[in-house]
Image (cartoon, rainbow, N blue to C red):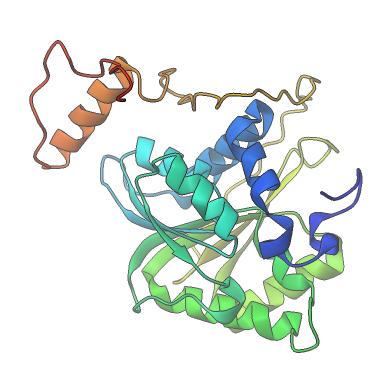
Length: 280
């Protein structure tokens, strides 16, 4: 684990930094779960997808599937790609609904052209700005990533990439390569005057630029609290509905959503969502 104040990218390749110990935090640390889910919600909001219409989305750097769970809760289908086997194992253990792929985004996105209606990414793109071996050239890896992303998006689709640029030069490097790949768009900054809550979202359009959304500018500081760890998994709570994952209410709502999507679902009974005794 990186020391306090040190950026994770400086600790080595992401597939080594995000080991089993690091992946465990994204399952048990309630603070990290809450932050990741909120950023995924904001990224989805900036995509401006059609209302009441399920979309097929790409989640780059999907990790343990927290952002993907939010997409599923909103009725969308998704595919996640990540370079860390430990994080993908954590996603499988959490029974995420999306399809998962082990891969390096710096080597391109391996899907057919026009496959996705949109793309989100949480805290991943800045990793491409670091060279972990002699053959790694950040500008070339960024261009390979953005050009392949441009290809796999449907015409006119958007990508919203939340990132933590180290400085203005790194942000310029990222946006320059995105522009070379054909994207238009810009950077949305939420809470620009807050050192703690400030967030960068790179909003990219694979068609003509319509408008750049405004960043949140409410001068609100998040409540200071320590990260909490437990010996058991923390139930993933849906922020908008307040339902505990795998509870009866959660199961009923999930079944109702799948019925609206035209899927075949078993009828509801008194045993729906009921906890079963462990098998011996």
